[in-house]
Length: 310
Image (tube, rainbow, N blue to C red; front, top):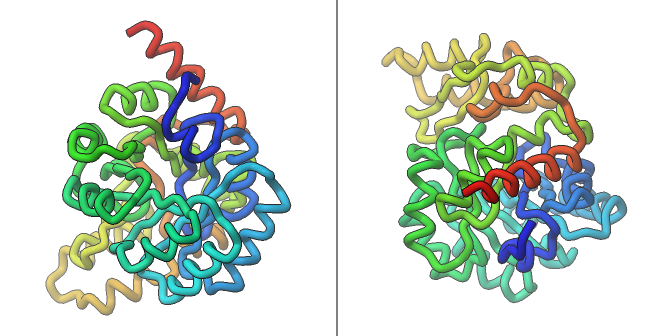
């Protein structure tokens, strides 16, 4: 890899960031990605301060490389999470599911680099003005909570609108995707689904097997009526959820109850029929379980080779 502004800013070898996947992105996965030269992330999700602190301390014991925390801004414990990140000296955070303005000064005062996940040009411009160090432009091909715009359309528009580095996310799983992201104006990539099948990922084996067996049209987006669309694999749960969404007689409360705990059921308990197997459309391109090092180095080598031809 050539000199890269994101690598220099974050102190990492490769311009690859691991997505902050709830119930999946733990200290072990984050440390493995960071040890492999990327930036690993711990998902704070709805953890309280002590739970998050335990994960941070575990990651510190597993790696001497930089790692970060993904802050879910809608968490009831977000104030605690931000305080723990600052006190524990975590060098980087990514933010999502909300407006980070309330916490920017506190994070910056603690020398935490803030990378904001954005799904629109307007949000990218706003967080740049707040002091974000970079934006992660995430297209709707990604897994989990998604926006409306594709990565191919979003990344170049964001790159044209901001001066800070743009990191592309959504629909990237190999060197071709990384090379394409560079051509669109990104300086680095973030991947979630690709790391779901990393050997160091502690997600339930049945979840991994579903990802490895997925095809290009096996995902579905549900939750649009709730204002929180989610991409996951088609199964009993998502098909029933989608069906109920189309029925005017279904209440918002019923839909919210159906979705409550669905990711945990799949990721932790292994119920891949009645849980939410969140993943991106790129799952159909992933056919093997590899180490984080193999994933990162393989993707970067492939991207470099492709870009040399241009």
